[in-house]
Image 1 (cartoon, one colour):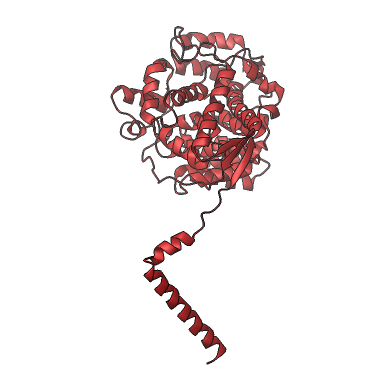
Image 2: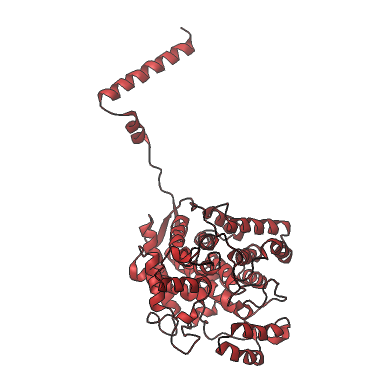
Length: 454
């Protein structure tokens, strides 16, 4: 017998003998295969508790800085670029605001905007100021309410329980867009996830969850599967399809920013948590491509993006989302440059820099944000209603709200979330399981353009 044939014969005999032995033991082949498999060792990423606290603070303050910095520009430039930088805290001059104030008091938002638009393009009509309080912004207070719902109900809080807290605690006159449509659905007994879905709402692709999802990334550092689960639960309160995917993408970037500071890598990472076939993913790829064609000219990239996505103005999450991504890609990890590009891209020009600055703020940590902007940490947060006194979040937070309360609560919820999902905390170090992202099933809104804000 040749050597090769002898070797083969020996292998066959050995296999037959092993098979006979296993059969006599009553063991199946499947069972042996399973028992032979060794469970892969869990790989952890480490984060000191001190760094976690610092980055949570950076994420929250980044949001606040971005929305307060750009607040006076909101919706003054739909479909246009803002023609100048804002290098400091700016507002329109008092005489202009006095002219617009009577319309705001009557709730005539459109008339107020027309007054401001007459003066918007001349920077001499703007002046710098020093903030003394963090203004009342839905970018923040909807997240404060999410945080309260988790504290009250635990990590197993349902979308319906969150929605019930909206009905109980929110000042109804301070709810807009898809949030308002969802709120009206709650009052009719239509609860999540149906409250954000057509035909119950035609605002599934609106911006709301994109600007209110940040919390779920902050409590899920490096845990994209977990932040996606939170976004699925909370995002369907008011949105559907790309509106929900936008929040998942933001949360993925927030979560990864605890370990990665390169904005380009964060942008690319966000594509790993949403369906590639979705409109939102298509938009992100378009922004990356536009950036790569004009790496030193954000305005050229803006014009390219506007050709395709500029038809979707108003509250559309894909157009506004593009301006978040432009800020990230052209901001080079600097908080002012990031939020300034997002602001100058126009449209919902305060919410978009809130998102981009929040992500960069997480990467930098509060300790890495220049004092010129980080000074908001020492200011109270306004919780008063715009309409007739009272508070926006009735019976939960005092007016004003303390940053200490928000930051401490976020860290505590975050630690519980980490521990509940396979992490551990030992000797001041957080160990976070390193798992690849997962992608949810595809869902898309088949509707026309998102309405303009009312």
